Amino acid sequence: MTSMSIATVTLVVDDYDPAIAWYTEKLGFALVADTPLGGGKRWVLVAPAGGGARLLLAKAEGEAQAARVGDQTGGRVGFFLETDDFARDHAAFLAAGVTFREEPRHEAYATVAVFEDLYGNTWDLLQPKG
Image (tube, rainbow, N blue to C red; front, side):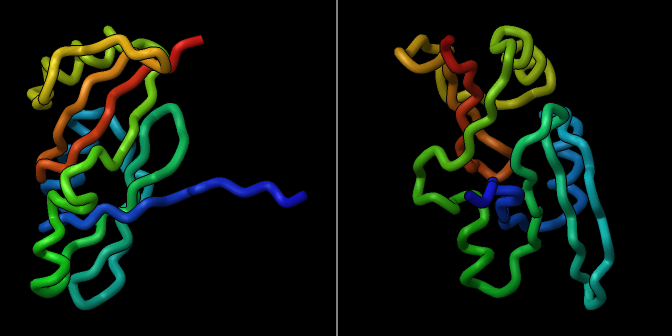
């Protein structure tokens, strides 16, 4: 049987540099690649320090894509950032100015809290149980 994994997910942004700064400075992600592609386009990958899927920060082109910046999932939580220490990362994100939409809650599957990225996309910070 073939082994597969989701390696990269596109996140539409309004500009590369503010997005890179937010993900690296606020969430502590690593800048994996920033390669010019010509015509103002860049191949920009960021990823959490612990591994997992990377984000391709793709600059919106045209009105349809620009309208999706900050609303890629129709208002639902679209991204899930797992941690091995919820309290540590929640505190670090708060200290970095990340906006949480709720207080941490304890669900059957995880300790979780919803936060927003710089565009208003919603994320779960979660520490799975067990």
